[in-house]
Image (tube, rainbow, N blue to C red):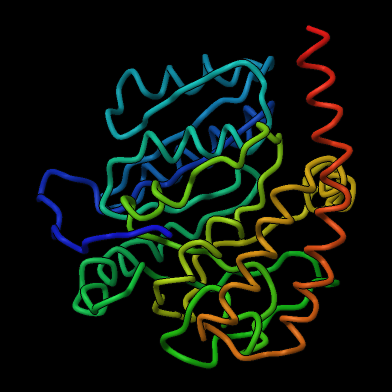
Length: 287
């Protein structure tokens, strides 16, 4: 179980918010996003991890970073979104951190107001991990609704309050780094919700109906092939559903329907995980 002492209010020279962006072969999209973020009049840091891109992403970002100290660029060989996400989070030095996809749009005009909330009194309440904000959904086929309460946790808002649609979490960086521990097995995809489920076991969030950006669903994006990705990396989904089960018995939500789905899903994804681990074991012995 992760722990956080809640100490520290942040120095004036420290960024309030680190925007963590994993990216792969989307040079134009990520450089446009980075430039727009850096134009915002807020105490921001932008952390981009380039996951083995071959389209010149590193070169384009390093050119920006040469004259912009708020941009941190790291890179590695291609290991998948999970590794890139964890690497971007490790680079963050702001008081809060937000994971942001390279193909989404950020409403930078709202960032000053959002940063003000992050340093306001609501952020200092006991057992508050951070905030969750609304997003505009670009796909008309996707449903979304507003937060019905001002304070909840990142499982309860889905399980009991029936909030649907992509939202954007901004979490205290120290706490997010503790939650961002990769599952054993080096899976290429780890759902971000696994991190949120770990945080939700102990901490609440402030829910704010302010749009922080626009969620886009590209034909080659992860959302379009979610089922395939889940079959390829089933163990992190198993861990996610185990956290859902644990959260119910900790009293973090009360929906028995949500619990039942978590129990069934945990059995399914555990059964899918066994052959994956066997293949990895055989492959490691062969090499």
